[in-house]
Length: 238
Image 1 (spheres, rainbow, N blue to C red):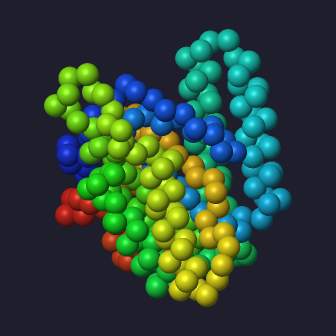
Image 2 (image 1 turned 45 degrees about the vertical axis):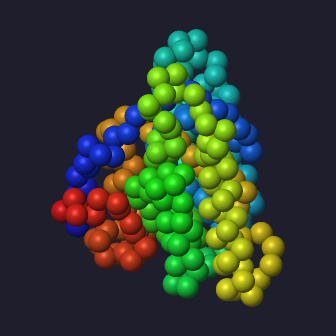
């Protein structure tokens, strides 16, 4: 039986109109001060052949959709294709028997948990996360970094964008996890999947998706039973 999630108005946040852009292997658009759903995985958790298949399939569809003349329809179709790509990508992570699964070790999972909470109330509000065996889903609100007392909403020199936030989380957790495992070298895959939250309905859906991931992976039957699930307003879970 799936857990019902009720969202407090506190999680709404305010989105700034300012955007930033960066590119790894896929383009990423960051809405300054927004809430972000981010997925990152262990290095070597997906075979290169499978990852190539998924990306080629996705890029072929996107290239076709770019030919659609109606801008609104084109953007909607591209967004839906992105969602479908991510759903398939996540399904692969949940069902693969091979590949790195270091996060099954409670000690390693605890290291990841500590680093996620380390920057909470500083670089972001940590709304929800789940730590699976080979990947992590997080939902963070970067609105905490903006000063709304300034009417012009000028960004402070110390503002930390999403890509820098992820480098801090992944860098520190990788270092400590490698020490614990007696390993060296790359721990996380360099690429992360991220999307900014556009409205409260999307926020609710993302929280449900994150907390229900262990149910989808057939680890538990109730989201509250998975020890590496976190929701800031856990008292609102029914």
